[in-house]
Image (cartoon, rainbow, N blue to C red; front, side, top):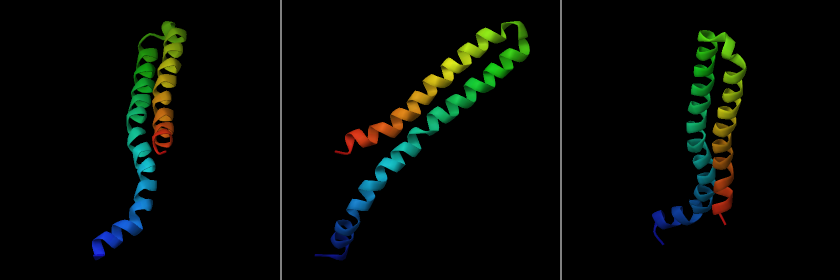
Length: 83
C-alpha cells in the first residue's frame, strides 16, 4: 500500500464525519442572510409607516420562521442522507 492510500484509508471516516458539519455550515449562510434582510427591511418599513406596524410585525415573524426552517432542514438533511 502506498502512503497516499494508507492516508485515505485512515482518514476517510473522519472526513466523512465532518461532511455533515461542513454541509450545515454552508446551509446556515443563506438563512442567516435571509433573517438579516427580513428584520432590516421590516424595521425600515416600521420607521416609514408606524401605523402599519402590526401587519409588518406579523409578516416579519412569518418571514423569520420560513428562513429558520431552511436552517433546520440544513441541520437534518445530512443526518438523513448519511445512512
